[in-house]
Image (cartoon, rainbow, N blue to C red; front, side):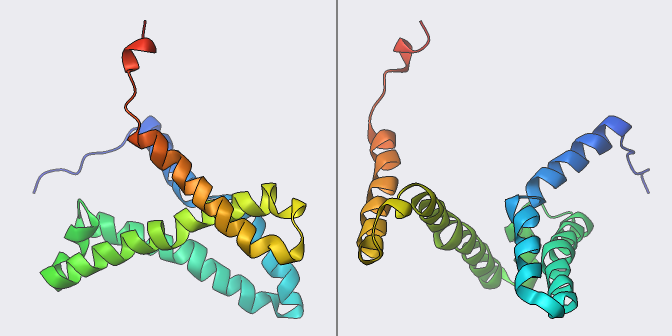
Length: 153
């Protein structure tokens, strides 16, 4: 058996800060306080649920990836079969990107920047128009051919 490579203190610090940045977001700072206010006297079950979902699940995912030495999500799910691994990969990417993260960027931006200026009856149409423009703008910018030589001279 070959000896396990050891990490230096600098590598531990780098790895720790990367994991912290990956898992700790505004939701971990703001959401528990709001959840505690809403839970009232039932704060203990709410805190346990938050710890299970915000601490234990990410920790288990890192342990699963490190113990199986999987290089990708597909490799992680492949022992269950090719079809399941493909479904798992597509479902995870769709739920994290297309179904949750992307729409959330538009709704949060709308609720902070546009919604306060519209009346109650205009919120839905306002969100529809804003979302269309919000996602159309980067699409048009990406579709436009840019001469990068102008920027580097």
